[in-house]
Length: 68
Image (tube, rainbow, N blue to C red; front, side, top):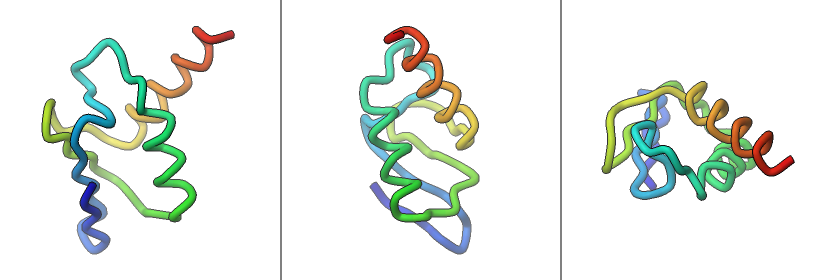
């Protein structure tokens, strides 16, 4: 994971991809962002297209709802 604070970009590999149906590590990634108080506008996954923090938050929420 690489964080570019001035650009507010997070580059990561295999933690979250907006093009994947499954996101088993999305919640851990979001927790790391929040715990470190990173200001992220853009997520650039190595595998997948550019996305925003909102997409990660939505993926985590969907997983939580499925888990019950």
